[in-house]
Figure 1 (cartoon, rainbow, N blue to C red):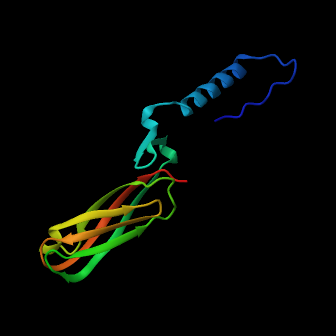
Figure 2 (figure 1 turned 45 degrees about the vertical axis):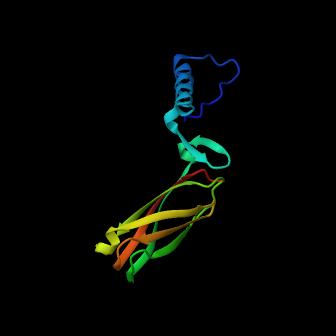
Figure 3 (figure 1 turned 135 degrees about the horizontal axis):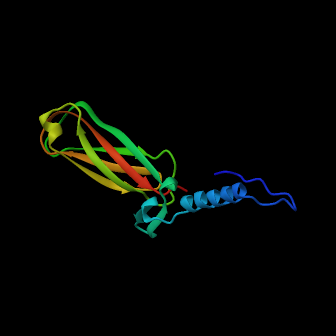
Length: 147
């Protein structure tokens, strides 16, 4: 946004100067818009719905390697954890998606369960419904409000 020079006392105001004032006010109005689409709302367990400007929200795309070429039996589980790089004010909303990196039959039939989500760490398990060799990872989409 433009910084307007202050007029000198007694200086006549001309159309150019008034144009600059109106243009600066219009830019300020655009930046201060209260459009609902410029906000992110995160529903927190203890504090209810929290809304902040989109630019103030924290969104992280994380990845965790759970197994790497290991043999799993049907019904077995592997735990995983993901440390958040910066603490959140409230526990964030997390979505976990398994990835069958090894493209194996055992990796195709897995279930991801998130066990705990805190302001600094996410913990979960991957359950293998079919036995066999696996290389499985978990993608994490984390949306929250930072401190």
